[in-house]
Image (tube, rainbow, N blue to C red; front, side, top):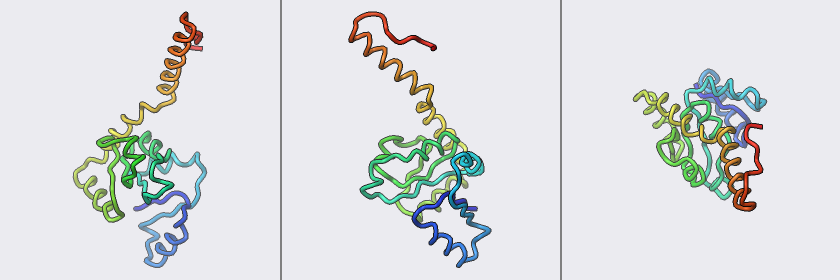
Length: 161
């Protein structure tokens, strides 16, 4: 089954296609969902998609949903966007595609060769470095170095407050 969560610009068109071809049992369109329900949908997914056009708006951005997908341990099939590629690189649980037909082909490859779980684990490992604990530790270290260099004395930051 294909589960499409949310309502984008093409939601009405997708709904028409779903009905026209009698695909209600194959394609589930949830419409808008509250944010607190997203983990339920991620848990149900085998993989997640980031379909996007490489345009002026999307060219260099990194949607937060990619981090959410990866933190849930899901492999991500994503459009080859420069911002996403720069942020995540290769072999980190993101499989890049250039066009819609590749999504089906790559999905079938992942299922056939049994690498869904492996790709999901790579994604989860990679994104762990962006946890709030790690970000906080890095930020504290930067502040501590800044204080030490500015005042050339003991750090002003107390540990473990």
